[in-house]
Length: 269
Image (cartoon, rainbow, N blue to C red):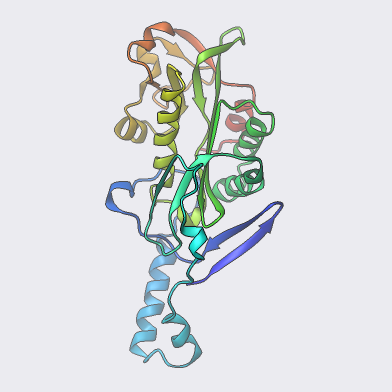
């Protein structure tokens, strides 16, 4: 398998032509509005079997037997800025998670666009929250120098629009389509929670799949603890205590930043 690289400002974004095989512990991925790669994978598998039956002769057969391109040794090194690292066994080297830097912005924007396609609201949300420096934490997943995942958190607001000091809202998780269902999104969320705890935040809120967030991270329905949201979401609006007992400090309406209105107004799901 080879990689196709798209050049964007400040970054070359590598899109491997094969899906990855994750370790069993991280096969679950956050649901996103993208086309499943399952059918394409079966078609490719059929093609490989046919080549084997036909003898895999000629240029096509030779190409199919080639090993995946290897990265330079420096691309396998774990930088000191890495918060955590892991492998998804795709032959492309380790994935590191670190805080977003200025050089990552173009690559992160590209990942959001590829992950959510025509859903302009999610792209605008991720761009606005980062470009206006309103995030309290912004993380990227990087593999071989390419951004393959992104996640950010911004302050929640009280009903009157005043920012809270210790409650944050999670933005949508973005993962390169060819790298989805490999656990990258789960790792980003888990590391985000860990970093927020270390920084003394009390509460994180999210709008997402109830079963996923409750099972993987322990989120609970916000309305069962007297916390409401401006979108009228029920089970999808969840909160997680970062500091034990901190839920009692919040009640009534907790609002997202105004940029989230772009997300909800354009969300087709």
